[in-house]
Image 1 (cartoon, helix red, strand yellow):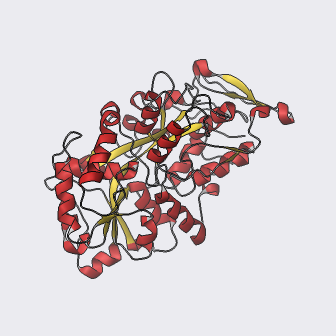
Image 2 (image 1 turned 180 degrees about the vertical axis):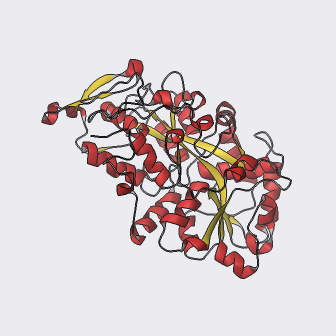
Image 3 (image 1 turned 90 degrees about the vertical axis):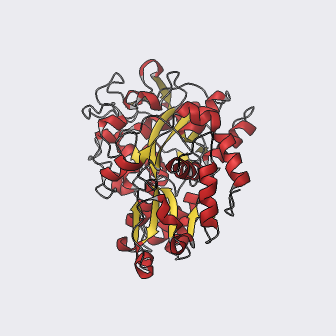
Length: 435
């Protein structure tokens, strides 16, 4: 039985990746494509508080009682106290929110694996979510490595014969998939707890978590070089930082968010990336580049500074055995004069139309929004969409840093422009590795 009380026997810490070898593998997958391990970018909504208050994540409400195997009741909402009727293949589960409430049977479960695009080990703590889901329902998930952009291309290529059941990735990419006619409607249990601007009224797309662009750096190396902690994007132009500074490629959500963060910090917009290109020109001469599998390069000492999400740096600092906590730090930076410089990016999912295993997909989508599962994201410093109902880890940078730097881009604006922006950056940037 899965409860909506994250402190019960379904211990979220039980599923957090532990051990040096396992974590190294996870980090390697993170950039290999991640959902976005360097995945692509989700845009979106308001620039809300990053420490899980109600302004970011909607109304919290009290934590309601648990349902049976069909998942938990969603904090006393209209999904009720639903559960499962047991009996081998005849076992049934109540799923869905509101008009989407329905009963599914274990007979509907896949014989092999459930495929959800970009649900993969090494990114957003999906590995722990996958393990918990299989432990609860006996359904294994495919370790679907890749970025949001890559998976959107896959979904388009397989539109007539879908290979996956769920599109998962940057929220704006889910919206693109919907606009392409690739998705269908389903409102998972817990849908009412998601902020209105981070879900579509038609039930096609729902955000599940969010992250903010940050600078992760080797504090021990900075100390050896006599460098101060970075506070603005201008600081990264210093030759002793830029010599081994890395960004993730712009076709990933992670990389696009980083690019748009720099561009915004220097006065650019979706219709003007000149400030970003000028910034790249300034750091390229000292050795900065784009690369994937960055975490391994950081822990191995090949690079000392990487621009990714806060999640990536904090997870590396606190959940990776290769380095001591004191060797890694994470900074939320502004523009040179205090301008916004840290894009907040939502990620989410959408059920694919005419896809295999639609009933098991509903069960998984419900599972991801349960509080126990949302807490698993927090274990890796990914902010769950229901963060206001959970206790955030104390290790995040101070809220004042987020307040000073964070911004968001309207989803519709991002969806309308992101493919052109990515293409222009790839065409114009002097940094190697943009493709």
